Amino acid sequence: MKDKIRQLLKQISALEAELNTALDEQEKLVRYSIEGGRVVFENAVREAHLKLKPRMNFLIWFLTVRPQNFLTMPVIYGMLVPLAVLDLCVSIYQLTCFPIYGITRVKRGNYILMDRQYLAYLNTIEKLDCMYCGYAVGMLGYASEIIARTEQYFCPIKHARKMLSAHARYAHFLDYGEADDFHVKLEKFRSELAGDKKVSGK
Image (cartoon, rainbow, N blue to C red; front, side, top):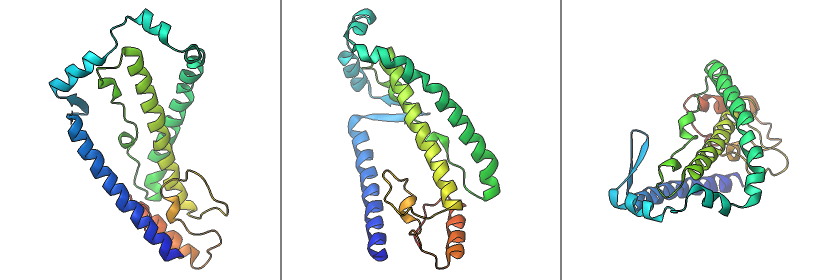
């Protein structure tokens, strides 16, 4: 059974690599490049985007927005405060603790991506909304990876019950109740963190 799980995990990794290749090819079709952290479209594409941008003024645009979006906006944007506090806390945590544990730090820029504001077919409010979503989702992914590496260091053991939406490292953790050579295996999990690797298995 363990061999089958390892084989499935290898297939998943191969499919992820294939997906990344396909996404790279898609980017070439859309005709943009990333220069100095900024997304730059070819002139023809940018002009086409500008033509697609709604030509209505802000007042008319606001009138077309669904009322429930306005009603919930204070709640949505109010979440920026706890998100920023969490961002600060997990960043301080990994800066202080990861060097002590010998864990490679998580690169924040690999998770928090805000590039949708370069899309010319969005208006200013839409661009701000997209920047907020890019930050919020990316920051939670960043925090999740920091916590996942911590879990791998201290407790790389699966739960007895199936967990939905587990982080990528979790699939390689030890089975619940797998007691043989636990501390030897734990040290292997810890040593792999120093090279910023996903665990390779048991």
